[in-house]
Image (cartoon, rainbow, N blue to C red; front, side):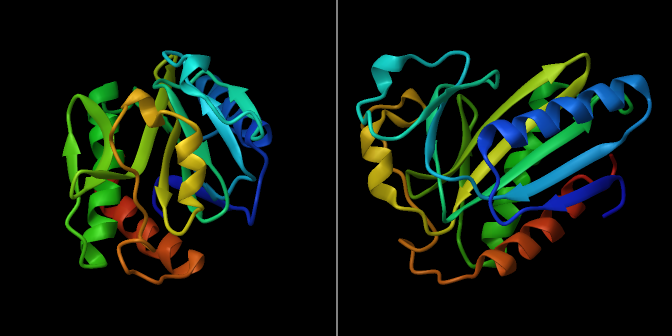
Length: 204
């Protein structure tokens, strides 16, 4: 993919993926590295963003990692497609809102190719289908470089979201492609996302 190096992992721990991203940020700032897309799955865990609160976590059996991304609490686990995007926003003067828009558009185009009509809510980053959240999103900007990214629910255990208030939005449902009746392999979904991502980020 032009402009982005891509690394794929079957499963990678959250902290390991986080360290990879932070190291790539340092390389970009130093001028020794470029943009990076990581595609992977995580073992089950809850991540707590900078605006999150532990009061939003009820399930004490799943590990919790406090992280530096924006947003509140979400679940990660098998059956999700995780896409971490380490991207230099300085080259084209892209701001955080523009970056979030492009991440959302990458998911929307992926869903469109599967016959699913997704939508976005400007006040609630992520992607929704019929009012239920199918993709969560959270980023951090460090010295003009964005990292973290998104999780798209392919076929995770949705009951794990019942142990939290997802993204701090009480009463909002979480859905998945599987729940929407779409049976797609991880590899096929990642390939569809890569195509959509490439078209959205083509100018980067």
